Each structure stands twice: as C-alpha cells, then as structure tokens.
Length: 444
Image 1 (cartoon, rainbow, N blue to C red):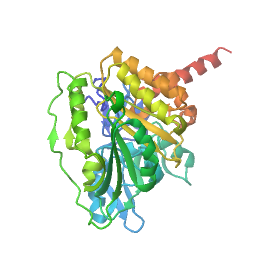
Image 2: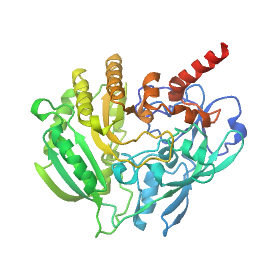
Image 3: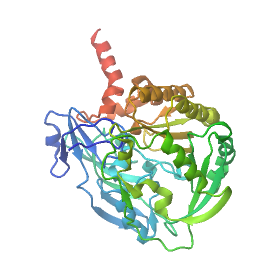
Image 4: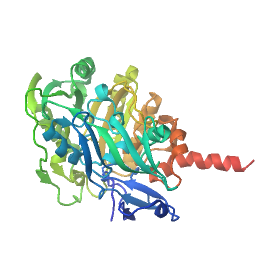
C-alpha cells in the first residue's frame, strides 16, 4: 500500500505489517521499523522508506472507562472519532483535540497534538495517565509520570521513535454538552486580532483565528476570531456525524489556487456579520469543519501540499506574523487554511513537544516544486530569527539546521530512541548531526 502522509507530496508504495502478531523478535529481524497511525501527519515523520511501517489501526478496542475519574483505557489504534462516539453520550469530551478526529490515540500521543484550548489545558500529553510501550529488546514497559518516567517523557511527542505504544490511558473531560456556544469577532486587519486575542483567551475555553492570508492593503490580515465554550444547559449530543461530501479522485490540477482562494476567502469572511456576535454551533463544525469533506487533500492535485506551522515568542508576535504572511504573498503563494492562535504557558510532560508560549501560525500551500521549497525555507528563516520553532510533526523538508535551532534538546529523544525505530524525518534531520558526530569521534 502507499501509506501516504496527508500532504501526499512524496508518493511511493511502502512496506508495512499489521500490529497483530508483532513481537519483539520480529522487530529484531534486521530492518528498521516505525509505528503508523492513520496517515494524518502532513510530512515524513510517518514515513520509513528503507524499512517497514507498523500499521496500528487493527488494534482499536476501547478496554474500559471510569465515569468517576473520566479515565479511558484503549488500544493505541483507536481513533479519536471512536473515543468521541463512546464518550459524548456519557457526558464526556476529549480534553484536547487537533483539527481532525481521524487520528489514532497512539498518534495523538506520539505527536503530542494540541488544540484550540492550549492556553487552558496544554497538549494531549498533559492528559495521558500512562501507556504500555513495546521495545525491541523484548520488554513491554508500563510508562507513566512515576514509572519509567524517562521513557514516558520521551514518548510523548517522540514521533513513534521510542517504541510501539500498545495501549494507553487518557483522562477525558466532563462537559454539559458537546456543542459549543461560539463568540465570533469579525476583524478587518491584523492589528485588531492582536488587540483582542488575550481577551478571548481569558474569557473562553477555546480560541482560534482564521486569517485571510491573501488580503492586502487596509484589509491585510483580516479574519475571524472564534471563541468557544461547551454549552452548559444542553444534553450531550450523539456522536457519529457522517462525512457529507468526499473528493472521489485526485484532481489533475491544483484547485486551491490564488483565484479560487480569493473567492473562497471573501465568501468565508462575509458569511459572518460585521462586529461581534454569539450563537450556538455543533461540536463538529467548531472543531472539525474539514472532516465533513472526505479526502479534501486531493483538491491540491497530484503534487500534494505542504503545511508550515511555526511558533514564536509573544514579544515579537505581531512583527513575526506580519513578516510570515508578507513573505507568502511576495512568493506568490496562497494558503487555503491560515490559522493563528496563542499558546499558553502549560508545559507538556513530553521532552520533545512543539507548543511553547507565544503565537503559532499555520499555513497550507500547494506543492509547486522549487518555488514552494524556496518559500518554506524563507519562512523558516523568519521563524528561527525570531527565536521560534518549526513543527516537525507537519514538516516534509526542513533543513537540519532549522531543526536543531527549533529543538536544541533533540538529543534527549535520541538517547531514548529504540535502536530499530527510524523515520524519514529523523534520518534527514537528527541523524545528520548524529552521523557527523560519530564520524568526528572516529577520526581521533
């Protein structure tokens, strides 16, 4: 099977084995391995081209749930959508969720995903009680903050490199309703967002902004700031909403270009009334608007897409955000989904987690070959100069130097990496430095 990433910018058939029947002896058969969730990573952190992937999706049972503590125990291949289907009728919700519910629990831990409420609840890893980790030396280790704590910290955000998560315990959040009371502010320029974002963070469980990346002049940086809280007086809604539409095949050309996105952005901006208003919305539309369209990544055409997500200090937040968006405009690229929010100060239990205090900007670009790669390098340079970091979980091409500037503590993960686990991302970034250091040592 192809086992694509969501970006689909490197198409190839890859070897994989289902998790059922996998043993530590199998892991020592002379090839490298990498756990594979549901293929929603944008870059190559889910690829292991020379070796073999471990397809975890067949291990998808919910094993137990404690309604008093909210702790759910499940196998690592369970999708977040399965968790929601189970939890919502019982009055619970995920404490942290990314922008799609079609990721595995194991993948959510390995990427230490974040959501619209990082300022309140931190990352997904902050709500993991523990997990079982299969290592290639034959050990199946129980890991938590108190037991094998070093592997617990390395595995959260460790991109599957420390071993195979087989089951996990996560703490769910009690809610009055899954649906959301949404407060929307339509703002006309980027300055307005920075004047109001702290207020929205302080007032709401969730806060995120959609930005019209193509707007220029007096409209530069216009968008929608969306605050949200779970409704208190409504009964929890049933889960299981079906996808309304699906893209049946890959478009022969990129349909999300400058022209189509200008029209889309104008319509999306105008659909909200000017000023500020409050209304109730479904949890599906607030958290997962793109999940309603199956295979929406096919709209980018056969060359796929790149996603660039960065985080940078709050002190330089305004200037860095403006520079990043101006850079994309200068390079003639249109971003379909441009999202801006503030990360909070809650520290992840993982040693290799991407979120940190400051602002985070996410941009999606159609792959136009060298033109796009030059743009992404230019965006990296702006972020690194600002003292920020580029998200490795969504990357497919960052330079090794950008990686080290973003994660100077990467050796803490390398020390705990299972020796048979490897990814294309780790090979082209961390191993560049590790290999150079080994060669230097050998010269003495």
